Amino acid sequence: MGTPLSMTTSGGLCLSSPYDDWMQPEGPATQEPTVERCYRHPTEETRVHCTRCGRPICPSCMIPAPVGHQCPECVAQARREFRQSPAGRVRAAGRFSATNVLLIAIGIGFVAELVVGGPGALSTGPSPRQLYDMGAMFPPALAIDGQYWRLLTSMFLHAGILHIGFNAYALYLFGGQVERAFGRRLFLLLYFLTGLLAGVASYSFGEPLAVGVGASGAIFGIFGVFIAYNYRRRYSAAAAMNLRWAWSIILINAILAFGIGTIDWRAHVGGLISGLAAGAAVDGIGPRRYRTAFAIIGLSAMAVAGVVLALWRTNQLPAILRVG
Image (cartoon, rainbow, N blue to C red):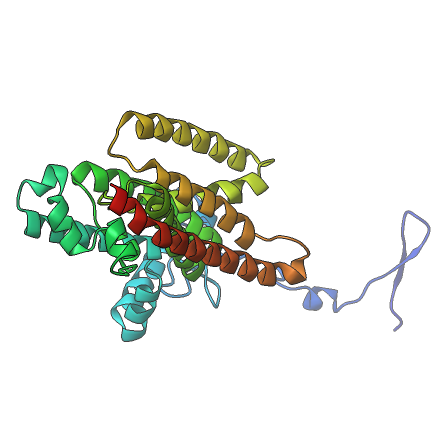
């Protein structure tokens, strides 16, 4: 027997077979995945499971993993396990910011001042003689005895709780932003270079018998770097806002500097100017392929200028002291 033919309404031929019923599947060709609900958000339907614990998770809870996605709880547990391992502790220490290290360092210096100066040092700091013994900047010690290391040690001493409080807060505000922009090592280089140049400015143009302490010069240096960095990006809304904020801070500090006689405004100005110059140098000058060289040249020139200025003051200061 041949296969029977039947006419379609469109005029074509339709083949039918006694085996058609046998060839048809009994159910749907593919099984639809079961829809579940996220274990953290019961109203959200999902077909995705955490590759670590197997629980259903919605898009809000999906955290990309090497394979698939994991839920927030499993990711947090994995981080805790990693931190507790030796490799995790080493990496965590490596992520500790230089800004926090500096804050701890000046905090330790202030604790040492309280030990030396007693309870009275909390409000006004130790006596000038005690600060001198702890490493404060004193121009005759540099000019006559060559104790230039005081330019560094004086950055970790402060005259009372308000002094260190303002400096620590300013370092916390601006240090972290500059460190994130330029990296830990370059941030530390900028901090100490501008701080030393601020000390040189105080030494060269300040009172010849004044005892100087504080991280203000270095912090104003970082503040100058912050301004230079944002000025180059001044057409963005965030940078423009940062610049307006910076000008307000400069105005406030100018009023305080000239209204409070104990503030060494020369160190502030020296730190700010050196910070502006250093920030411009490290943020990139000239063609891209020469920027690293220009940055090295610029920072080196600033260091040389500081040495020359300090030597000039050292040569003239003994005569000034004799006259005085």
